Length: 323
Image (cartoon, rainbow, N blue to C red; front, side, top):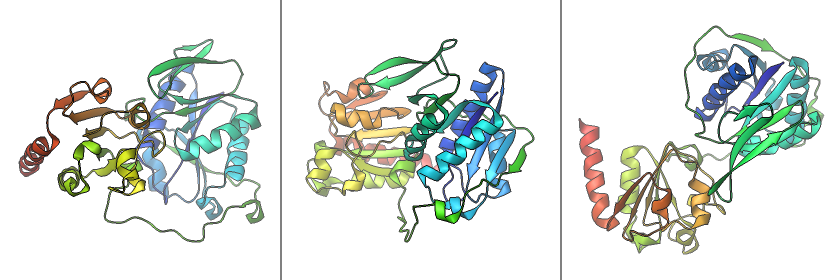
């Protein structure tokens, strides 16, 4: 019996979500009185794999074949399922990101395992195995019970604190029975955004809404983001008006993000928008309307004119950076 955690890598590197998942797997294994095994598919250096050991991973199974550099849901889920059976995994974990959302259902079907997507913490009970997750666009919580012997979970971002738990790491190379012809997806061209923080990877996001009144007023948003090393974002009406590019649109119909800090400037807080940012660790709202719905979701709220408040914030950040 074991907890198996699949670690996605990005060009051979792991991100915060990976370390969060290892921390969760470690805490879950302690709760179940078992051990954790980490699975990595694709070329990753031994030094990078060893970083997972800083957060509780004691055994890592790696498939370094370059064929696994490009995500192919069918092949990846097959290999994950095979490894899960080989190690006797009772629980298989994924991050609740694009890869996890694609792979978890396939693995669930393959192993005849119950599935909970977007779990927001450790089980409330292990008998029956009960988890909590957000529902109704993040406005409520539901409890879901898994009754099958094997269980598949995806972990929502910012659901558990990343905790260091250093120790020795055993790295085992696994060669699955797959051929180049099994891969149906091939990457022909990659165009990467440079010079800006990628929105879905950002720890801090500064976002603007129609309360900014004009695309000409976006200078302070961009300046604050630059000072904080943050990404910029916007609400749907702003992107629909053409004030900002559509790739910055966050919300239920845009990009779902979970930064450590989300600063919402001039955003009223429609339910569709809040659904896309509700997993943020901290939300700061700036709005002239003290009754704006965004304040109900915010950890900190500032009532006032953004064009007066932003310059003061920018000055405060400059002083902080200079100190």
